Image (cartoon, rainbow, N blue to C red; front, side, top):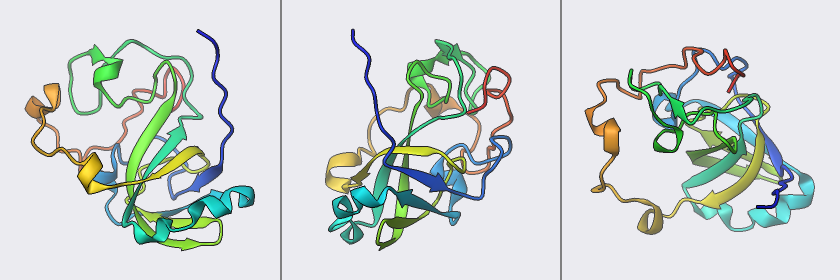
Length: 165
């Protein structure tokens, strides 16, 4: 395979400066506001985005180094394959969050339910479309038996020892 190169289109601004003790999913960050500061050259790409209530934000785990193919995720005590988790130490350090879109102002998005580290580079933005993106009756693998509530679990640094998420 050949390499793939992405150029960040913006940066996330959030209250989270340290990966320890931050929410692990948007569900645990309800009401937490932040912004996406988009490269002004990309501002025209935001046309009509304000009509959507949520966005899918794709970003680079810029403080993650290396990866493991088996990890113990935040919501379990058992190792799982990294592709069966949302752990940040991945072969390609890409993250995804579905966030509430509060406002679009020029090249700045105000977002809510932010579970992302401040300074995180944004790779892409897509509108969340419930008819395309919601499958509430599907299986959720090992998570169905997980005893942890993702609304209350915080990052405990387990991915910081080998490189911060």
